[in-house]
Length: 163
Image (cartoon, rainbow, N blue to C red; front, side, top):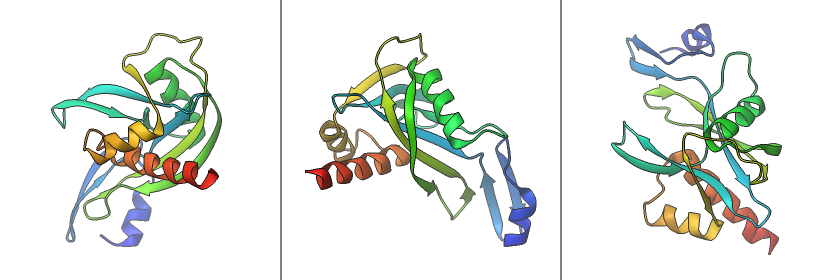
């Protein structure tokens, strides 16, 4: 698919499938994940069942960026929806292109601070992990969600630089 054709498609609000002479391209809406840190240095993750993986996963809270929503607004909304907590001081760490070979899907990784109280009800189990534990889970294959893996590696590197 040509660059011009991609630009004509714009940023879709919903997932799309486009078949072109060059092959099939899956187009997903942009998304966010939030690596929110607690005062004691633990990062908030959620445990949820993912039908596509047929298993429970542990990953950073996040989801789709709605039309006309900024990554920061989406991060606030998704974090609250998935954890029941609020996150402040959001800062973009980096943007990932999930898979150039067959799809267009950008994920923004943000960090911020959270407070464990008050906590509203949430659909997923909240899992608080130290970066050391999260890195061990990445290493042993317990955490495989690509944006979560990237965020854990980035945050671990930053933590080591501060020492």
